[in-house]
Length: 429
Image 1 (tube, rainbow, N blue to C red):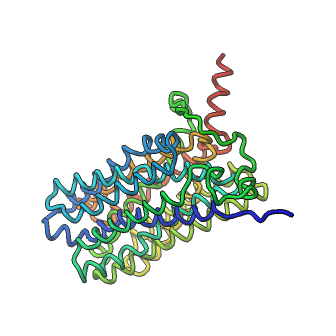
Image 2 (cartoon, rainbow, N blue to C red):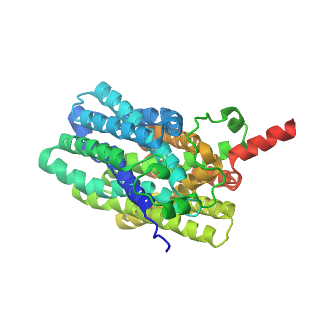
């Protein structure tokens, strides 16, 4: 009698959704509370943009180390430490009292969030087969994008009732509980989980060319650096994240200043672009897995989804910049950010295929490049908006998408980097 497979991998997938949700709620809360913080401490746009940038510096610095730690010590330990760390500094944000303390706390908050997504990518590599990774990667991403959907309304409600500090105390405490839950539920490998039966383990291991191993290895960075694919996936993600972080850092303030929304109106309107992004991320991950299962090549699916997402995003963002109707503007902004779901889902799934057993390192590299965009976007957008106005700031963001589209045609996710570099070494010999 055939034993019905357990579904523990999908339980972990749902938990990844929760982790992404909490991480982005913690991150976007500062942006939503921004008008009150700027008023109370007399920060101008550039100062507030620099505070956002300090977060991204800390976050970007920890991408590659975070991925390597997850590969070496396991995603369970790396991610538990990361959640605990950033939750502590979420709590400390409420105790900040000037530009220096806000800057230090936000930078260290970024350090804590750094290992989350590379660690999640390692977990997906270990727990899902190639036909399920698009969907699995979309869980943590969709959770990330649901965070900003609820953050404006939730944050505004808490702030108007208890003040801006309360939101950081509340979510700091929630994060500690989430870290404990992850430690209790997660395992690095499915074979080590007491609730995974043999039928589910067989599904997880289907099609894997290299079996699970606990052998500690360092990624061949010197070979990676010489690969066009390595640079291409970094460049396309720089562009995608640059666009997304403009939304994350400035959407609430843009809606209030340029489109004249009230605080409560902004709390509703700012949710729609993020809701669109969450929906497309989940649906594109599922759709890409279905296409690959039906025999469409990995390269064609990942490249098409990644490039088309950036094309639509850039066009819609440019139209949003020229719109004079606030409602139409929100529609274009929602289409623009929503279409990036195809790019994000394809990018993280491509890391699993390019990196293989070094998925953590490759995803860390990709997210490092993306968050260099996060370092640049808040402050550069503020400078352009101050000097030339919001229309120019949004239009400039739209034109950057062209670079990412070109880069996607060089990623070639059907050719793993480890195999490619070894092949080159053998030919040279």
